[in-house]
Image (cartoon, rainbow, N blue to C red):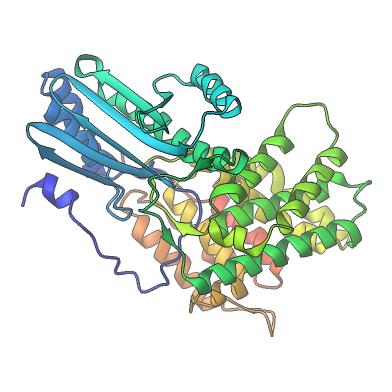
Length: 443
């Protein structure tokens, strides 16, 4: 069996933990073998061996755990499929051209509103374009001659096409009633019990945070920055832990965009905006949440990869503010600061893999009821006795370091520095452990 067949074959999930997905997909964690495949694609392109180049290119895109790319030869041309969220992108390549498209929605009748929207969107796109096919489907299309279809161009073009296809179908279907879903047979609804757990968590956490904002120990008018941290911690936590699709995903992204927009609004006004959007989200019918709870595959990450120095800078700029809130007995706000730091990094960036795994472990430790409800057996914090399982936490950190040490040979987390006196002390010491990691890579 050749490399092409092995990499495009099926894989089996041997992880005994529940098959629950978290957080935003990133394609930045490529192995050394995948980097070699990329280099081979570039070499074939320089030699004008276009189909060989594209075979290697799609091997590079293929994530064996996601099973996100399929590619085969048919009558002298390459046929491919790749997945990005709720959308399937299909296409072909031969010695002369490559073409890819994704169906966005079916339109029973043409409407000035969505047609104007798509025309305006076309002016923002660099490689692809929205169009109507012969069956009244809204599609997004990219094509190129092979002569200038280098792997670099293909990567950015297909990413633009895929990301916009995935985002625009949800937005258009939610806004324009005459549009209907199309090409969604690959979506797999989540198990009913997982839907129930996630829905309960969303409602419970929004309700608790808004109650803290209105009636907690912190005056929302005198200390708006503290209220912002509470709300942003919630937004990023919901995004990572419930992995929403459709309307809710776009709502959380809109909250993030509007909060950080340079629009002249005060923090008090921005907090009130977040309050209204979260309240509106909580009022959605249960079946609307369930309709958007499905499992998807992804090929391209939408977050930008960063090195550990950026994580260190962000921790340094935010973590010390915990002390004032702790000293003045605003304990929920103090505990939200580490959550905000981790949540922002996971929402906005693709952090290095060991850091991502350690951040995920932090969520497991600090949300024990949620993870237990999802079927996870590793309980790191006993909510009845308010005690940490120190041995399990240290072992989990050591396991993360061990499996990443091949690429980060100096990775040696200082588990002895962790403080288990209280959730606040633990959270701060945990962020400092991450901050002080030696993330030097093999040259």
